[in-house]
Length: 200
Length: 200
DNA sequence: CGTCTACGATACGGAGCGTATCGTAATAGG
DNA sequence: CCTATTACGATACGCTCCGTATCGTAGACG
Image (cartoon, rainbow over all chains, first blue to last red; front, side, top):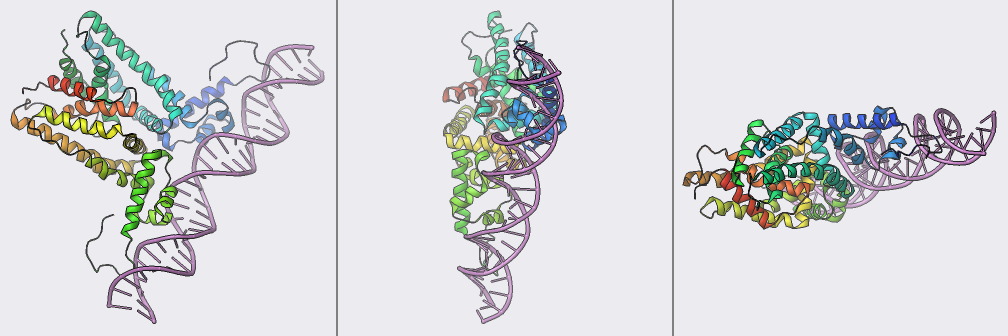
């Protein structure tokens, strides 16, 4: 993970960057196809055209590979919107997310990782740092801009507001009782904006 | 599960009801201690003082045993409130839930099962029927009573309202970014009631 | 006492994890 | 060119755990 950057620092055979990419691509594909629970490192290695030992030289566990394979793509699908007002930002952010998880491949990857995190404290920390915090930092920025504009009350609990906006979607994703549609995301945003007392 | 009820219908040695209880108790304990991912059927059998085959005679998978061991206790912790108004009902329901999942044993059991459901379609169906639907039926009843009382607009999308009230809590439980407190549940209820346009 | 079914004990095949070993390939420095 | 160093592929290994099969025994009924 991570190039060491300093050239000339190696003394032996250098690590194959092609192997890194091949492993991450294979992991991403298998994660999307079967979900993390049904994906094995041995499969990942085979599809990447690499020995299993080569995978374990770079990552410590199945979940770690899957996380690395997933994070970049997932975050790239959710850029920070800047529409000039809170409602526009939230709608855009939530619709980007809705579009992403409407792809069954992405949804399987995401729910599979969320599942693995529940029983693996080490992976849970990585998940928090690499996924939850970056995404919540973005969400928070949308609300902070709204505070600067005077759209919402300075006393608003932004963390609660974030959970109100994005919690229901994740809840539907994980419990699968109802689909996540644009109508749903719009209803959520409208209700929350009224609920926290937005003044446009 | 389930006694067949009809006496005299058996011709051989009857099933040990004590074994059923012992297995479910052992499963519940191990599920709470380690979480489903780190619990094994062999451990359950050993702690129940029963052969592994006896477990598989009654349940089809690890998740099925855990679900049975968990469902009754979990639902018993969440009776349907009836305070006479929507706000009181929602606060009571959400606080009962908060109290339940504040017990790390219950939280581990719950998140472990939610995790397992993500990768097991058979268990997912059982989870839906035995947990999600019963709980959502109760939540729905609270809103339907509110509709009868004229507290909320007849055009309200009750399914969305339910996800608005209970989604944020489950989201915090699964992603663990912030704790679920009574202050949190109260903020959520207040915001949602305003958001969906309640008239008390 | 014979029949029937559940039980405990045990063995088994298989998947998959993560580690260890070892000979070979690729690079840097002398 | 030669050697030290590191990564690689192939392979084997020990381990845990799953879910199934086998078999002799225990407990119920007629």
